[in-house]
Length: 322
Image 1 (cartoon, rainbow, N blue to C red):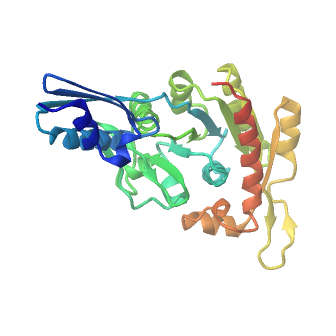
Image 2 (cartoon, helix red, strand yellow):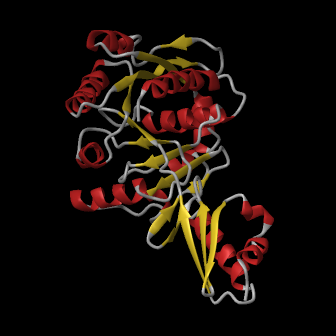
């Protein structure tokens, strides 16, 4: 008859540190292992390896593996805008990459169901998402940021014509995916204050919201509505970001202001919302984004703009109690 000592010795050395207890009663080996920080796939692999190793021990007729794990304390930050075309998705990508560069485990949820762009921005457009037990597995980008997007789940160029309930179900699938040890989910919301925003607030109340606007009055009017929505839901507004704040001429280096200047900062002061900084309208940012190489990931002249905004978000997250 086998002994508990024989069962313990059969456990591979690289897995022994995860094993918390081993019992052997009437040929049934029961193993309790710590799977904290492991995603669903890695936890399943751990279970299988333990079952295979211990099942080979003479006298063991059955192996039962119980996996325990600490609940991941995960924050959610929504990035929103009152209207489209203000660069919200680009900002989301770059602050996610900048925070990953600072050592945070970050995931991006592309909640812009009708106009997903994160796969292009993070260079994962050609990678299909897989699922295990109907749970989606996020894609790991080369920049240390995980991502999930409807753009990875449907054929490129195909229109999504869904009503509210289906959009809500799609958002839930993305949010409830196997994010593993991800500490922070940054949610790239569609513009406006529609079904996706309401579902997010009701089911996955964010810890904070970042609002993006361009300097002109029209964009700021819509940004004010977005801020009001989050305030009604008692979601703290981390701050306002002014995007396309001045055009940098690639030929002469002169700066012009096609969308005005300073409007977002003035609006932030008027609403009592922190102003998080400006990002210029620069062709280098556009080219880098279109090629899946976020400026925040490389040593570029525009990386510091995003790093500064990400640092403020990091400071905010340090003050949020889970």
